[in-house]
Length: 396
Image 1: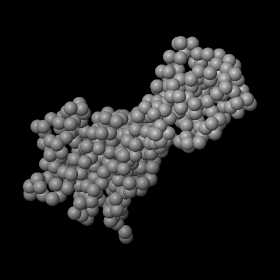
Image 2: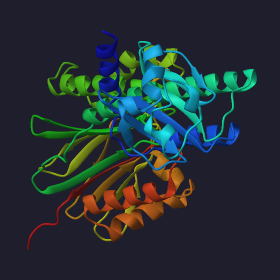
Image 3: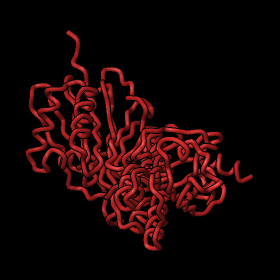
Image 4: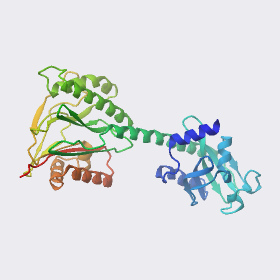
């Protein structure tokens, strides 16, 4: 049963046979320095092998399970200190003791999954005999707990990233006479930004929104906001708000639904909520405190779609206003988050810089890939999101 639980724990982590990672190597480097040992490892015990997720001081990726100190440490599920392995009957015949690198001292501390099952070890090795003082023992125990936390949070964040990515459109929308592309790059594991597309009754609905903050909390609110916007878009298209309703009415309803959750989290959402008629190029929109949308004209000029409306989540007394802009053949609408704005300097001149980028890269996919490359090079402190829709020039 214990063996099955350990295997299940490793399967959940999905960390076996993954490339080296700095977030684990920093612990083994620190341990080697702090304890004055030549070798430190983070080892995971697989069915018939020991896999070294991090190994500092020795070039090895895996070893037969029965040929390691760590297998017994996991079995005992308690710290194991071996002062002289050459005289210890449990270890003296191990290949690394009898031969290179001639290990004498070993200190192994079990690592556990979220259910408390020992799945691996955090280890120190030395070629000389020695022991750990009480202070060193406590320090190693604390470091082991940090490694455990990293293992667990790694899996949770990876899963959260996968879920969030699944909520974003995986492909650009296919709109006759138009070209579109978008990207959302999280500053951390998950983002508080999002973009979305919906095709409803021949109309094209699109959204770029930014939840205040970043990280897991913002990502949870992002998923909630996305679901509400999608639902109210369909309600608007179905005429549930009345014959005289416009996008401002729909967004006011979105705010009503989200207000309690946003207020409880001391958060708000800025966003650009567009509704385009592909046959005419008319775009109806509401800008909720976002103010980061440009229409880049085919003649080389650009128009900033400024906002005077509040973000969502501030008050229940505000009524949002629908506005309109026309996309002529060759024009491109570019909407982005403040992560890109800040990445490029955070001044009003940035709007012109982005317009220039759009003129240099008139294909939305090229523009988006340029932004992706810039973000990858600069390591932004905030999420970077961009959506670009271009009305293709008329043939002739």
